[in-house]
Image (tube, rainbow, N blue to C red; front, side):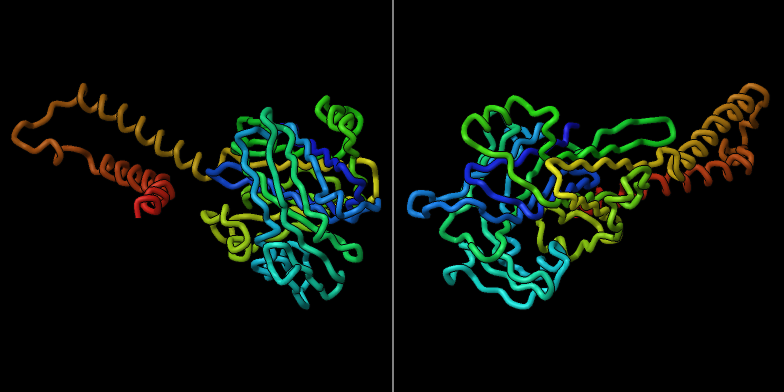
Length: 344
């Protein structure tokens, strides 16, 4: 999957931090969070320029995908900001005394940040291009401004999967503003007087099941790996309601080189041959052994018609059947649990 991103704006802005967070949730479609912390680097008249216009080009995006503004969630529950920005909140002030216009957060260490919702957003008819706007009346000239949104995709994973016999590789190749191969869509947007935004630093997060093993990562960009605080994120993202606590980790990469473009290449591995597969092999072996033994018993021995057929079955057969039933129960118990949850 081509996970390239290009962020452009009509008015010249400088993005100090660009946040990318991929979510790969088991048995659900994936989604991706994007956040922009920016300042305007050109003066404009707010009477004539009512909105800052952005365009995000992402080849993986389709017109069926949906977008939800997350800035509103951050404003409604400022406790979520502690996990998103990794800092404690000292105070919060709504803009124009109305949270719907945004708010100013005062952090303990990083200072003030103005959180702004999207005023409009849409994915073009052919997909790949997300247009969104932010009202200039609420922009801060002193503080950095921040907005965040969620793209819900129709894909099961945002990675490129390479399946093997014993394991599957999940390859994440995240790129931002890579100019080497600019798509035609980006060229046409630039011709419409948009500019590729200057990005000072890029943060890349991957939320994955803890059954994945990190096989490759650029150690210079890797910051930490920790267990995901599922209860906290469930309040912030309604989309992860089904996620179970203790089963997901978050891998954090950062590049603050102030380069023209950014790239994060990470490979995760998931074993295919595990206890479940070994259990299936044992169960299959027992079934085959029982079938061969039954055929031999049927053709080699004569049964006493006066005695029940079941009483004539050797005790070793009953023991094998018991082991088979236990193996099947252990294999299908998680599936039965999920069915129970759906029904109840």
